[in-house]
Length: 508
Image (cartoon, rainbow, N blue to C red; front, side):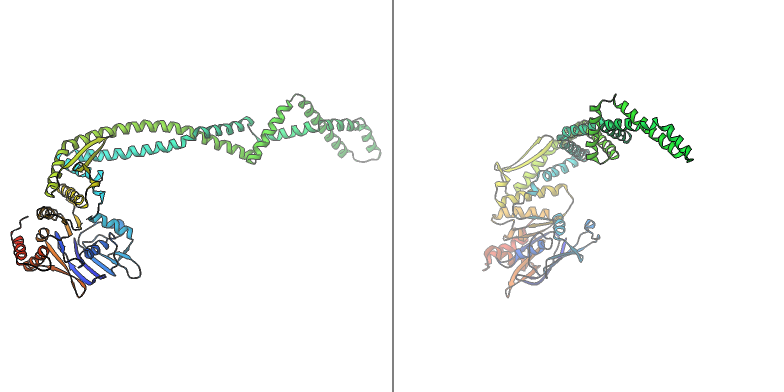
């Protein structure tokens, strides 16, 4: 998958290149030669390690789908990282953010180094069991898909109800307030015509005594009305305007007297209260038109709040139906899982035994419809084991996964065989060789067993204080390096003989 690497100006590396093969790639070399730097370079171009190299470039030969990142589908991709002026990442000369390059890197690469617990997440472990179950039971995958859909629908409906409940907390208070405001407006039942009439009545009420007095005083005019007309005749002047004026005065007096009489039958207190209510609403909303608009708005708002309760009832009914559907599917799915869990446990323990891990216990149980698988060693939680044991447990899980998945990737192992006996190291070597049929594996090794079965043996050594990368091709070169791993810098004849026999006789 990674076909080529070039490193420039990275600590002890000046300008080094190497072509990689598929399969198991083992990196060896004396302490301080730059083995870890080579691994950092490979991981650094994917943003998974920090490096200060001036330039790193790799060629990745695999058709991948990067269209979501705006990169056209190709049969090979050039990944590069540069620290000139600032750190930048590129794929096929397209500038990529560090966040994006890490996302891509995590999809392609599995890196077993420190205690990274993501492989032991319940979802990932149960996923392997589901793959096994789907092979054994053709209906399982269909049931799983239906269950996922039912869970999503259930979560969405649950969220809707939770949102309604949040609104519902203040619902009664809001409803009470709206009802109060609506009733306050409806009690007045405002109209422009009524308000104008009320104002006129108020005006009449406040001035009726004065009006009565004035009417009494000007009524004398009607007593001398005929004399006025005779006077106009005597002086030969037109009396039409005067007649019209006197008639208008008479109309106004009649109107006001009628109003005064009408006022006698009115409830004055009620009138004044209604005017006060009108004034209060106009002060708040501006005018009669705005009052009526606000009434309509508040009535609609109250209707919506009332509908929330109805909607919630419908949603709760739907939630019960979805829960019932989800529960039935969980029962189907978990029944199939239970039928296959023993095969899962047996297979995983076979792999961990190959890795010289003893007393492995795989426990499974169902809680509230969810299926759980816990892995323990010596009755201890995996969080309490050593890093070496932890990574072998991960390797066993990865090996189990390859039984049922066709997907391949790139696997990085950081001294997976350190502090192991020869027998333990050979066991890991055999397992990695099997994994290498589906993964391109990069690993640093200090032991001869793993090194001897490599599909590609890379030696890192120092020359003139500079790190050099060399692929060992001949059996002689391989034998000499394996002998160095056995006996140290002073290679013995016995070490040479052992390494030659190891290369010759090893069978995987």
